Image 1: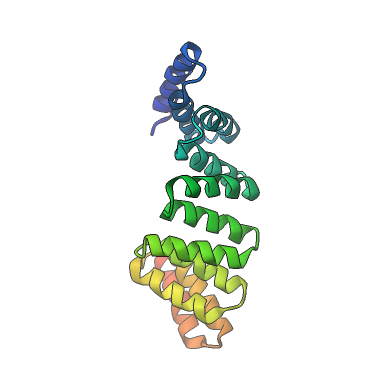
Image 2: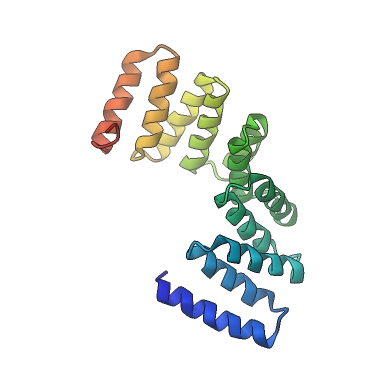
Length: 195
């Protein structure tokens, strides 16, 4: 969305909030606009109001959780994403992002559990396999990591990051020829990658 459109949304929702200071929908859309503009503190402030005035609405928790995640406040993100999952039940987004937060906190078992649940919800999502593979790599389970990277590449073969990660895991397994082959693909996809 263009900046002008986002500013218009902010102006319109601010007027709606002036008319009704408990308008959770207006806070939600204004929070989304602030988030798109990168003003995460204002976005969180608006999502706080959504949660306050409409605690049964899951997207207030989800969007605030994502904003906390972008700010690196993974504990608060996990709390909000857990509430989101509690309200709507099993879903890819909640498990995926919470799993990524756990991974960033080096809570590998929890990360793998959530990313596995995300994959169960959407077995065709390449990013979930990649993230779980990275987490397996963090705990030096390189065979499991390679298996997940293989699946990620099967689903989407244009991501040089996955080839690089798989190459590193293969290198750890002393499968050097395959590792070099993956690094060659990285260079094909992005000639500037190693510079």
